[in-house]
Image (cartoon, rainbow, N blue to C red; front, side):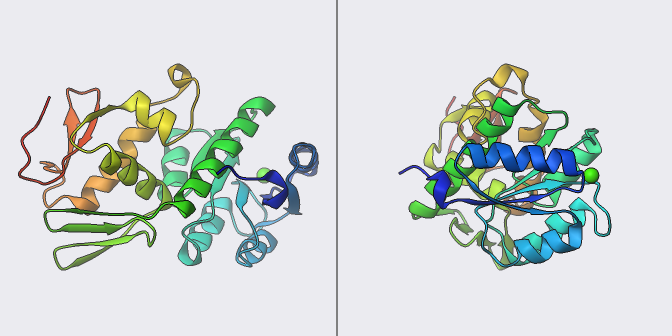
Length: 242
Ligand code: CA
């Protein structure tokens, strides 16, 4: 099943009125319902009502900044998709955005078709995730994809939405090497992988290993495949099949 724009409320948290108006028009033209908040505080309060299917979030905002807004939304809502739109585009900002649980990060200025494609990709995955059941068990690691939670032995784990999407994809394709380009297409929804920075994949894999591996520097479950991609093994004892 696909998502229906008319059923999707998008919240735009952006203080620059010209940009906000452009985004509102763009989303409405494409059939979405839209609400605009011009500062972090209003945006956060609005986001926490749970009425939104997607949040577009600027970083430099008066009052509470975008990273804090993202962090506070994630404290209460792990599932609402968040796309950061920002003029800040250093590695550190992108890593921070992902760390705080954003699903995607788009640098300003952005092209309209690209923004719409990313919005659709995020919403499609969000719809698919809500529709499928799922969990994984590998050795003493257990993860419930729908609850964004799991256990490694006695240790309780919690995951971001993006981490769960990666885990679920790799688990559904377990014991097979999955190239980075495939992850970028299937998990991030990028059509044109050549122009995308693969560091995003590696940053997430590193974060995931810290949670699911007993020794993150010597992974036994989520292994690197010939430097090109990643492979989820169905158990830590499973032989590496290349
Ligand atoms: Ca701003």
